[in-house]
Length: 358
Ligand SMILES: NC(=O)c1ccc[n+]([C@@H]2O[C@H](COP(=O)([O-])OP(=O)(O)OC[C@H]3O[C@@H](n4cnc5c(N)ncnc54)[C@H](OP(=O)(O)O)[C@@H]3O)[C@@H](O)[C@H]2O)c1
Image 1 (cartoon, protein in one colour):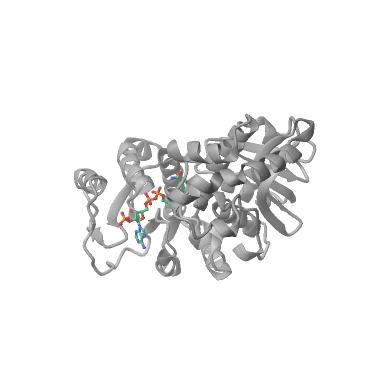
Image 2: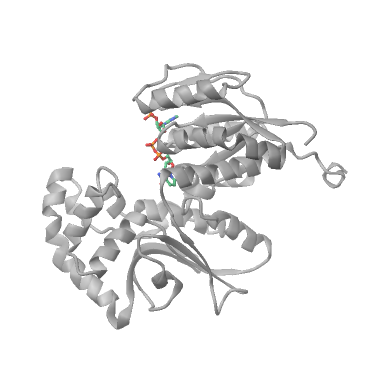
Protein backbone atom coordinates (compact mmCIF):
# COMPACT_ATOMS: atom_id res chain seq x y z
CA UNK A 1 0.00 0.00 0.00
CA UNK A 2 1.46 3.37 -1.00
CA UNK A 3 0.87 5.62 1.99
CA UNK A 4 -0.48 5.06 5.46
CA UNK A 5 -3.64 6.81 6.64
CA UNK A 6 -3.41 7.75 10.30
CA UNK A 7 -6.68 7.77 12.24
CA UNK A 8 -6.72 9.55 15.62
CA UNK A 9 -8.71 7.71 18.29
CA UNK A 10 -9.65 8.85 21.82
CA UNK A 11 -10.71 6.17 24.33
CA UNK A 12 -13.34 7.15 26.91
CA UNK A 13 -13.31 4.46 29.58
CA UNK A 14 -10.50 2.06 30.41
CA UNK A 15 -12.46 -0.62 32.24
CA UNK A 16 -12.49 -4.27 31.18
CA UNK A 17 -13.65 -3.53 27.62
CA UNK A 18 -11.56 -0.35 27.15
CA UNK A 19 -8.33 -2.05 28.28
CA UNK A 20 -8.93 -5.13 26.12
CA UNK A 21 -9.59 -2.77 23.20
CA UNK A 22 -6.33 -0.85 23.68
CA UNK A 23 -4.39 -4.13 23.66
CA UNK A 24 -6.25 -5.35 20.58
CA UNK A 25 -5.46 -2.09 18.72
CA UNK A 26 -1.76 -2.73 19.31
CA UNK A 27 -2.02 -6.43 18.40
CA UNK A 28 -3.90 -5.73 15.14
CA UNK A 29 -1.50 -3.06 13.79
CA UNK A 30 0.11 -5.26 11.13
CA UNK A 31 -3.26 -6.49 9.92
CA UNK A 32 -4.74 -2.96 9.71
CA UNK A 33 -1.73 -1.78 7.76
CA UNK A 34 -1.74 -4.72 5.36
CA UNK A 35 -5.48 -4.78 4.77
CA UNK A 36 -6.32 -1.08 4.71
CA UNK A 37 -3.09 0.96 4.92
CA UNK A 38 -4.48 2.19 8.24
CA UNK A 39 -2.84 3.10 11.52
CA UNK A 40 -5.02 3.80 14.58
CA UNK A 41 -3.28 6.46 16.66
CA UNK A 42 -4.52 6.60 20.26
CA UNK A 43 -4.31 10.32 21.14
CA UNK A 44 -5.98 10.17 24.54
CA UNK A 45 -7.54 8.00 27.24
CA UNK A 46 -10.01 8.96 29.96
CA UNK A 47 -11.49 7.35 33.05
CA UNK A 48 -14.25 8.58 35.39
CA UNK A 49 -11.90 11.07 36.99
CA UNK A 50 -9.53 12.45 34.44
CA UNK A 51 -7.56 11.94 31.27
CA UNK A 52 -4.15 11.71 29.65
CA UNK A 53 -3.50 12.82 26.09
CA UNK A 54 -0.70 13.12 23.57
CA UNK A 55 -1.32 15.22 20.45
CA UNK A 56 0.94 13.01 18.31
CA UNK A 57 -0.41 9.76 19.75
CA UNK A 58 1.01 7.48 22.44
CA UNK A 59 3.71 5.02 21.56
CA UNK A 60 2.47 1.43 21.95
CA UNK A 61 4.75 1.03 24.94
CA UNK A 62 3.26 4.07 26.72
CA UNK A 63 -0.27 2.92 25.89
CA UNK A 64 0.37 -0.55 27.33
CA UNK A 65 1.94 0.97 30.44
CA UNK A 66 -1.17 3.13 30.95
CA UNK A 67 -3.34 0.02 30.64
CA UNK A 68 -1.27 -1.89 33.18
CA UNK A 69 -1.40 1.07 35.53
CA UNK A 70 -5.22 1.20 35.24
CA UNK A 71 -5.32 -2.55 35.85
CA UNK A 72 -3.50 -2.00 39.14
CA UNK A 73 -6.23 0.48 40.16
CA UNK A 74 -4.62 3.76 38.95
CA UNK A 75 -6.81 6.86 38.46
CA UNK A 76 -6.07 9.65 35.97
CA UNK A 77 -5.63 13.27 37.08
CA UNK A 78 -8.37 15.74 36.29
CA UNK A 79 -7.50 17.77 33.18
CA UNK A 80 -9.23 19.97 30.63
CA UNK A 81 -10.44 18.22 27.46
CA UNK A 82 -7.82 18.71 24.77
CA UNK A 83 -8.67 20.17 21.36
CA UNK A 84 -8.67 17.05 19.22
CA UNK A 85 -8.41 16.72 15.46
CA UNK A 86 -11.76 17.23 13.70
CA UNK A 87 -11.57 13.73 12.18
CA UNK A 88 -11.01 12.04 15.57
CA UNK A 89 -12.98 8.92 16.51
CA UNK A 90 -14.13 8.98 20.14
CA UNK A 91 -14.81 5.53 21.57
CA UNK A 92 -17.24 5.29 24.50
CA UNK A 93 -16.70 2.19 26.62
CA UNK A 94 -17.98 3.88 29.77
CA UNK A 95 -21.28 2.98 31.41
CA UNK A 96 -22.25 6.63 31.98
CA UNK A 97 -24.65 9.11 30.43
CA UNK A 98 -22.26 11.94 31.17
CA UNK A 99 -20.38 11.23 27.94
CA UNK A 100 -23.35 12.37 25.82
CA UNK A 101 -22.57 16.13 25.45
CA UNK A 102 -19.05 15.26 24.40
CA UNK A 103 -20.22 12.66 21.86
CA UNK A 104 -22.70 15.11 20.32
CA UNK A 105 -19.99 17.74 20.14
CA UNK A 106 -17.61 15.38 18.35
CA UNK A 107 -20.29 14.46 15.81
CA UNK A 108 -21.12 18.11 15.18
CA UNK A 109 -17.50 18.95 14.48
CA UNK A 110 -17.16 16.20 11.88
CA UNK A 111 -15.63 13.44 13.97
CA UNK A 112 -16.92 9.93 14.57
CA UNK A 113 -18.13 8.00 17.60
CA UNK A 114 -18.13 4.30 18.43
CA UNK A 115 -20.19 3.10 21.38
CA UNK A 116 -20.22 -0.02 23.52
CA UNK A 117 -22.16 2.08 26.05
CA UNK A 118 -25.93 1.66 25.57
CA UNK A 119 -27.00 4.65 27.66
CA UNK A 120 -26.59 7.39 25.01
CA UNK A 121 -28.71 5.42 22.50
CA UNK A 122 -31.32 4.28 25.03
CA UNK A 123 -31.60 7.69 26.75
CA UNK A 124 -33.32 10.74 25.28
CA UNK A 125 -34.71 10.27 21.79
CA UNK A 126 -32.89 13.41 20.61
CA UNK A 127 -29.57 11.75 21.55
CA UNK A 128 -30.48 8.66 19.56
CA UNK A 129 -31.46 10.82 16.58
CA UNK A 130 -28.23 12.82 16.62
CA UNK A 131 -25.98 9.77 17.06
CA UNK A 132 -27.71 7.56 14.53
CA UNK A 133 -27.68 10.36 11.92
CA UNK A 134 -23.95 10.99 12.41
CA UNK A 135 -20.72 9.15 11.78
CA UNK A 136 -21.39 6.49 14.39
CA UNK A 137 -21.21 2.76 15.02
CA UNK A 138 -22.73 0.86 17.98
CA UNK A 139 -22.52 -2.84 17.08
CA UNK A 140 -21.61 -4.03 20.57
CA UNK A 141 -24.55 -2.38 22.35
CA UNK A 142 -26.69 -5.41 21.38
CA UNK A 143 -25.26 -8.94 21.55
CA UNK A 144 -21.58 -7.87 21.94
CA UNK A 145 -19.67 -8.48 18.70
CA UNK A 146 -22.41 -10.50 16.98
CA UNK A 147 -23.37 -8.59 13.79
CA UNK A 148 -26.88 -7.67 14.95
CA UNK A 149 -26.82 -3.93 14.23
CA UNK A 150 -25.07 -4.39 10.87
CA UNK A 151 -27.65 -6.96 9.86
CA UNK A 152 -30.57 -4.80 10.89
CA UNK A 153 -29.15 -1.82 8.98
CA UNK A 154 -28.62 -4.05 5.97
CA UNK A 155 -32.18 -5.37 6.09
CA UNK A 156 -33.56 -1.84 6.39
CA UNK A 157 -31.34 -0.50 3.59
CA UNK A 158 -32.29 -3.37 1.31
CA UNK A 159 -35.94 -2.33 1.42
CA UNK A 160 -36.98 -5.47 3.29
CA UNK A 161 -39.77 -5.02 5.82
CA UNK A 162 -38.91 -6.08 9.35
CA UNK A 163 -42.06 -7.57 10.86
CA UNK A 164 -40.77 -8.82 14.19
CA UNK A 165 -37.54 -9.05 16.14
CA UNK A 166 -37.14 -11.55 18.96
CA UNK A 167 -34.00 -11.78 20.97
CA UNK A 168 -32.58 -13.47 24.01
CA UNK A 169 -30.07 -10.78 24.86
CA UNK A 170 -28.98 -11.40 28.43
CA UNK A 171 -26.47 -14.16 29.11
CA UNK A 172 -27.16 -13.82 32.84
CA UNK A 173 -30.93 -14.22 32.57
CA UNK A 174 -30.36 -16.97 30.00
CA UNK A 175 -28.21 -18.86 32.51
CA UNK A 176 -30.88 -18.50 35.22
CA UNK A 177 -33.61 -19.66 32.80
CA UNK A 178 -31.46 -22.67 31.81
CA UNK A 179 -30.94 -23.66 35.44
CA UNK A 180 -34.67 -23.41 36.11
CA UNK A 181 -35.38 -25.56 33.05
CA UNK A 182 -33.20 -28.17 34.72
CA UNK A 183 -35.40 -27.99 37.80
CA UNK A 184 -33.24 -25.78 40.01
CA UNK A 185 -35.19 -23.41 42.28
CA UNK A 186 -35.05 -19.76 41.19
CA UNK A 187 -33.17 -18.59 44.31
CA UNK A 188 -30.49 -21.22 43.83
CA UNK A 189 -30.13 -20.30 40.14
CA UNK A 190 -29.64 -16.63 41.09
CA UNK A 191 -27.01 -17.50 43.73
CA UNK A 192 -25.16 -19.73 41.27
CA UNK A 193 -25.14 -16.99 38.62
CA UNK A 194 -23.72 -14.58 41.21
CA UNK A 195 -21.08 -17.08 42.43
CA UNK A 196 -19.87 -17.64 38.87
CA UNK A 197 -19.50 -13.90 38.32
CA UNK A 198 -22.24 -13.77 35.66
CA UNK A 199 -24.25 -11.07 37.45
CA UNK A 200 -23.52 -7.47 38.37
CA UNK A 201 -22.38 -7.13 42.00
CA UNK A 202 -26.07 -6.49 42.79
CA UNK A 203 -27.92 -9.24 40.83
CA UNK A 204 -31.11 -7.16 40.88
CA UNK A 205 -29.53 -5.02 38.16
CA UNK A 206 -29.78 -8.06 35.86
CA UNK A 207 -33.05 -9.39 37.26
CA UNK A 208 -34.81 -6.04 36.73
CA UNK A 209 -34.66 -6.69 32.96
CA UNK A 210 -33.60 -3.06 32.37
CA UNK A 211 -30.39 -3.91 30.56
CA UNK A 212 -32.23 -6.25 28.18
CA UNK A 213 -34.87 -3.52 27.77
CA UNK A 214 -32.24 -0.97 26.73
CA UNK A 215 -30.95 -3.35 24.05
CA UNK A 216 -34.49 -3.96 22.82
CA UNK A 217 -35.14 -0.20 22.80
CA UNK A 218 -32.10 0.42 20.59
CA UNK A 219 -33.39 -2.13 18.05
CA UNK A 220 -36.93 -0.72 18.25
CA UNK A 221 -35.68 2.82 17.69
CA UNK A 222 -33.68 1.65 14.68
CA UNK A 223 -36.97 0.31 13.29
CA UNK A 224 -38.39 3.81 13.66
CA UNK A 225 -40.44 3.26 16.83
CA UNK A 226 -40.46 6.57 18.75
CA UNK A 227 -40.26 4.92 22.18
CA UNK A 228 -38.58 5.71 25.49
CA UNK A 229 -37.46 3.25 28.16
CA UNK A 230 -40.71 3.91 30.07
CA UNK A 231 -42.67 2.65 27.05
CA UNK A 232 -40.92 -0.74 27.08
CA UNK A 233 -42.95 -3.38 28.92
CA UNK A 234 -40.43 -4.90 31.29
CA UNK A 235 -40.96 -8.03 33.39
CA UNK A 236 -38.77 -7.75 36.46
CA UNK A 237 -37.88 -11.08 38.08
CA UNK A 238 -38.28 -9.70 41.59
CA UNK A 239 -41.05 -7.57 43.16
CA UNK A 240 -40.62 -3.86 44.05
CA UNK A 241 -40.87 -4.72 47.80
CA UNK A 242 -37.41 -6.31 47.54
CA UNK A 243 -35.84 -3.11 46.19
CA UNK A 244 -34.79 -1.63 49.60
CA UNK A 245 -33.01 -4.85 50.75
CA UNK A 246 -29.23 -5.02 50.96
CA UNK A 247 -27.61 -7.40 48.45
CA UNK A 248 -26.96 -9.92 51.24
CA UNK A 249 -30.57 -9.81 52.49
CA UNK A 250 -31.87 -10.06 48.93
CA UNK A 251 -29.79 -13.19 48.29
CA UNK A 252 -31.13 -14.76 51.50
CA UNK A 253 -34.77 -13.80 50.87
CA UNK A 254 -34.83 -14.58 47.17
CA UNK A 255 -36.02 -18.14 47.98
CA UNK A 256 -39.42 -16.63 48.74
CA UNK A 257 -39.74 -16.30 44.95
CA UNK A 258 -39.09 -20.01 44.29
CA UNK A 259 -42.73 -21.06 44.30
CA UNK A 260 -44.24 -18.28 42.15
CA UNK A 261 -41.33 -18.53 39.70
CA UNK A 262 -41.71 -22.32 39.49
CA UNK A 263 -45.42 -21.93 38.70
CA UNK A 264 -44.65 -19.32 36.03
CA UNK A 265 -41.93 -21.48 34.48
CA UNK A 266 -44.21 -24.55 34.45
CA UNK A 267 -46.96 -22.59 32.76
CA UNK A 268 -44.60 -21.24 30.06
CA UNK A 269 -42.84 -24.53 29.35
CA UNK A 270 -45.93 -26.67 28.75
CA UNK A 271 -45.87 -28.72 25.51
CA UNK A 272 -42.07 -28.87 25.44
CA UNK A 273 -41.56 -25.12 25.17
CA UNK A 274 -38.22 -23.63 26.26
CA UNK A 275 -37.94 -21.02 28.99
CA UNK A 276 -36.25 -17.86 27.73
CA UNK A 277 -35.95 -14.27 28.88
CA UNK A 278 -36.54 -12.50 25.59
CA UNK A 279 -37.27 -9.21 23.90
CA UNK A 280 -40.11 -9.09 21.41
CA UNK A 281 -40.43 -6.05 19.14
CA UNK A 282 -43.43 -5.99 16.85
CA UNK A 283 -46.15 -3.62 15.60
CA UNK A 284 -44.87 -0.63 17.52
CA UNK A 285 -44.65 -2.52 20.82
CA UNK A 286 -41.46 -3.49 22.63
CA UNK A 287 -41.43 -5.84 25.62
CA UNK A 288 -38.94 -7.96 27.54
CA UNK A 289 -39.75 -10.81 29.86
CA UNK A 290 -40.02 -14.57 30.29
CA UNK A 291 -41.52 -16.45 27.37
CA UNK A 292 -42.08 -20.08 26.42
CA UNK A 293 -40.30 -20.43 23.09
CA UNK A 294 -41.91 -22.89 20.63
CA UNK A 295 -40.02 -26.22 20.56
CA UNK A 296 -37.59 -26.21 17.64
CA UNK A 297 -37.89 -22.45 17.10
CA UNK A 298 -34.60 -20.59 16.64
CA UNK A 299 -34.97 -19.10 20.09
CA UNK A 300 -35.44 -22.53 21.67
CA UNK A 301 -32.63 -24.22 19.75
CA UNK A 302 -29.85 -21.92 20.96
CA UNK A 303 -28.34 -22.73 24.36
CA UNK A 304 -30.10 -20.54 26.93
CA UNK A 305 -26.83 -18.92 28.03
CA UNK A 306 -25.97 -17.82 24.46
CA UNK A 307 -27.52 -14.79 22.82
CA UNK A 308 -29.74 -14.98 19.78
CA UNK A 309 -31.60 -12.44 17.68
CA UNK A 310 -34.24 -13.59 15.20
CA UNK A 311 -35.48 -11.30 12.43
CA UNK A 312 -38.81 -12.12 10.80
CA UNK A 313 -39.07 -10.02 7.65
CA UNK A 314 -40.99 -10.02 4.37
CA UNK A 315 -38.13 -11.98 2.77
CA UNK A 316 -37.37 -14.11 5.82
CA UNK A 317 -40.83 -15.13 6.95
CA UNK A 318 -41.04 -18.92 6.77
CA UNK A 319 -37.48 -19.34 7.86
CA UNK A 320 -36.53 -16.25 9.94
CA UNK A 321 -32.98 -14.95 9.86
CA UNK A 322 -31.13 -15.73 13.10
CA UNK A 323 -27.82 -14.61 14.53
CA UNK A 324 -26.55 -16.43 17.57
CA UNK A 325 -23.42 -16.91 19.61
CA UNK A 326 -21.56 -15.46 22.51
CA UNK A 327 -23.32 -12.22 23.40
CA UNK A 328 -21.12 -11.00 26.24
CA UNK A 329 -17.52 -10.91 27.46
CA UNK A 330 -14.92 -8.16 27.57
CA UNK A 331 -12.53 -9.56 24.92
CA UNK A 332 -15.21 -10.35 22.36
CA UNK A 333 -16.92 -7.00 23.00
CA UNK A 334 -13.60 -5.18 22.52
CA UNK A 335 -13.13 -7.00 19.20
CA UNK A 336 -16.54 -5.74 18.05
CA UNK A 337 -15.61 -2.20 19.06
CA UNK A 338 -12.37 -2.50 17.11
CA UNK A 339 -14.27 -3.71 14.03
CA UNK A 340 -16.51 -0.64 14.35
CA UNK A 341 -13.51 1.71 14.65
CA UNK A 342 -11.90 0.30 11.50
CA UNK A 343 -15.17 0.47 9.58
CA UNK A 344 -15.69 4.11 10.60
CA UNK A 345 -12.04 5.02 9.94
CA UNK A 346 -12.38 3.67 6.42
CA UNK A 347 -15.51 5.79 5.91
CA UNK A 348 -13.84 8.91 7.27
CA UNK A 349 -10.67 8.42 5.23
CA UNK A 350 -12.38 7.58 1.96
CA UNK A 351 -11.61 10.08 -0.79
CA UNK A 352 -14.88 11.85 -1.63
CA UNK A 353 -16.25 10.47 -4.85
CA UNK A 354 -17.05 12.55 -7.92
CA UNK A 355 -20.66 11.57 -7.28
CA UNK A 356 -20.87 13.23 -3.83
CA UNK A 357 -18.76 16.22 -4.96
CA UNK A 358 -20.94 17.10 -7.88
N1 LIG B 1 -18.57 -6.56 29.35
C1 LIG B 1 -19.39 -6.93 28.39
O1 LIG B 1 -19.61 -8.12 28.11
C2 LIG B 1 -20.10 -5.89 27.57
C3 LIG B 1 -20.78 -6.25 26.40
C4 LIG B 1 -21.39 -5.25 25.62
C5 LIG B 1 -21.33 -3.92 26.05
N2 LIG B 1 -20.70 -3.61 27.22
C6 LIG B 1 -20.68 -2.20 27.65
O2 LIG B 1 -19.36 -1.72 27.58
C7 LIG B 1 -19.18 -0.69 28.55
C8 LIG B 1 -17.92 -0.99 29.36
O3 LIG B 1 -18.04 -2.20 30.06
P1 LIG B 1 -16.89 -2.64 31.09
O4 LIG B 1 -17.19 -4.02 31.47
O5 LIG B 1 -15.54 -2.29 30.51
O6 LIG B 1 -17.20 -1.61 32.31
P2 LIG B 1 -16.24 -1.17 33.48
O7 LIG B 1 -15.19 -2.21 33.71
O8 LIG B 1 -17.13 -0.74 34.59
O9 LIG B 1 -15.47 0.15 32.91
C9 LIG B 1 -16.06 1.38 32.74
C10 LIG B 1 -14.97 2.41 32.51
O10 LIG B 1 -15.57 3.66 32.20
C11 LIG B 1 -14.95 4.67 32.99
N3 LIG B 1 -15.89 5.79 33.15
C12 LIG B 1 -17.02 5.84 33.87
N4 LIG B 1 -17.60 7.06 33.73
C13 LIG B 1 -16.81 7.77 32.89
C14 LIG B 1 -16.87 9.07 32.33
N5 LIG B 1 -17.87 9.91 32.64
N6 LIG B 1 -15.87 9.48 31.49
C15 LIG B 1 -14.86 8.65 31.17
N7 LIG B 1 -14.75 7.39 31.67
C16 LIG B 1 -15.72 6.97 32.51
C17 LIG B 1 -14.59 3.97 34.28
O11 LIG B 1 -13.63 4.75 34.94
P3 LIG B 1 -12.86 4.26 36.29
O12 LIG B 1 -11.74 3.40 35.77
O13 LIG B 1 -12.37 5.55 36.88
O14 LIG B 1 -13.87 3.56 37.14
C18 LIG B 1 -14.04 2.65 33.70
O15 LIG B 1 -12.72 2.83 33.26
C19 LIG B 1 -20.47 -0.65 29.39
O16 LIG B 1 -21.30 0.40 28.91
C20 LIG B 1 -21.10 -2.01 29.11
O17 LIG B 1 -22.52 -1.98 29.22
C21 LIG B 1 -20.06 -4.55 27.96
